[in-house]
Image (cartoon, helix red, strand yellow):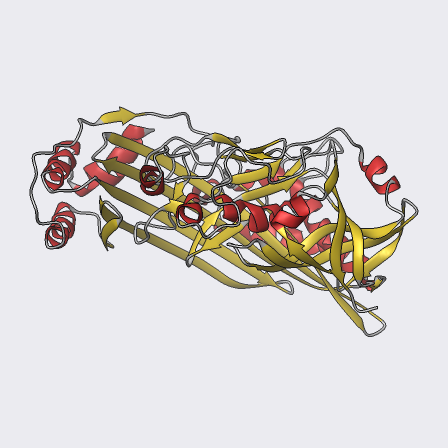
Length: 481
């Protein structure tokens, strides 16, 4: 893989590895702690369908170089949207104006790293013709429309990207990665007797569009399942009733409800917030922060998952990190910069949106490990409460973990039985609060390999979330009943 990326990014642009080494050697003569050069070349496409009509087809190509220099807590950064030796030398010249004091320090020799790739390298943009990609969207429309006569409108967006990355740094890293990514988002509108409801669903993978035609054990393609699930949620909500409000036991379903864990807990475990003592979890390593039923990991190594990374954007290999073990905080997510300032090491979580962005600690695939309870046992334990199966979105204060989340699918539970679907359900609380009130953890872990995108400081990166079904003993529920 390294040679493929080298030829694509360096050789085709008349840049040699020796020239990069020479540039970093010159940078290392300054009084700095670290420097890296990040090369990126990326192709994107998307196709949009609305109400049987292909509304838009989009293709873009972007490439460039980002140069970063670090001294103590000061960072210098510049970038260019071209890949050539002249542009790289101009970046170095601009940095010399900031870091102009010389020292005798020299960078390490490069060690070319061929790390294991956690995804296939085939280019999704080339595997299907444009006609075949458009046909995927028409199939989505047909699957959703045929689910129920009350489906009135279907919208869908099919997207794909293919990215080459190369990282070289003064600590001797010379690493490369090839990152494919595809996604499909579906939104369905249903109408009945003047009532209108929306249902949505999405899926994706680090792979090609062939993924959507893979069949489950019932011989149903993922494309059909994804489309019909959006339709099902829309139709279900036509019969939903208003939700109660108050303090109730809440059961969170497996899969995408893990977004609450990602937002209300995961961000609080990122190294930059904790180095600055901005997180509710700052200075809590080896201290109890959750129920002893909770073990939470960030796993960048899952095969073909959206959030997986063979290397992060600093050249560190993707890793499996145990963040919370049986309720005890074990680790923060680190990039090189924050790790050095806190005397730790990078956890392989230095991520950036593009060559024009600085890396920072970010999650990959974050999920809670399964417990021993069945879903039936968890529901049976609820006398009166809420079963939140899926979310539409919400708001979170990252530093405190306080959140407000809205559900897209939820039910009222009485005496262990699901009574009827409810809507306009809002869950209000804090990550610290719910993690200590988890009294049952299911054995049904599901990691939602959908279209999860994490936003931090204006940068977007692909992620996955997941969890088993969990019971929270008490949580504030905002309803309209």
